Image 1: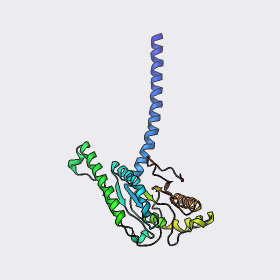
Image 2: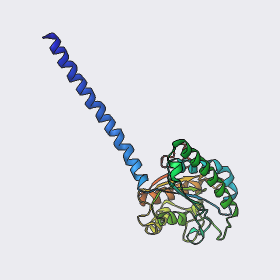
Image 3: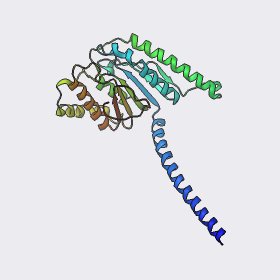
Image 4: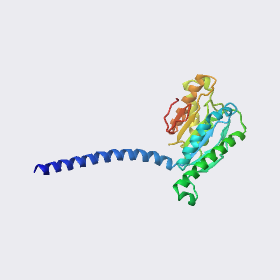
Length: 256
């Protein structure tokens, strides 16, 4: 009788533990699946360095950032488009190179090790092409068109992530003078630009790297963070504004 009671209690305990662990595992799986699903339905990554006259010379400091973005996009089998922007990217930006890292030859895809080496080599080649594209990009329109760059991203189909490498000191038509901007000025600028984005940034992860670098004033840097945080958030996107690219490429939000 005692042995039967012990076995019964042991069985009840094991069932209870199984339920608890299953519940925990289910929650974690649900969270991961939700994040992965969001990127799977939007397979395009945009890498958009600021090639304006005031920032292009600083892009050498962000080669590591470019390599990380390309490598991450390649590892995930995503599609990467690169476009350098000046004062009016709506008129001048050209996507080059454009690489679909998920598109592998059947002979390569059949072997995991071969596929891994192939993808790594392709990523390295893509970085070189991006460096070459930056070098030959002419500053056709003076200024820094970060607001228009967001508009371009919003009008590009299937974008899941947009990575802008820029100091965020915008100088463009219908923009704002950040060094003298009040909170009311920033809100008004957001109100003016939001309709131009439509629903194109909805659910998009926007990374802005390099904010405030050699900005004319700390006031301008802070205003840039406020402007683009408000604008992307109002457009229902997610935004991370940092000096350096987050190591895990996770949107953290706010300026750091």
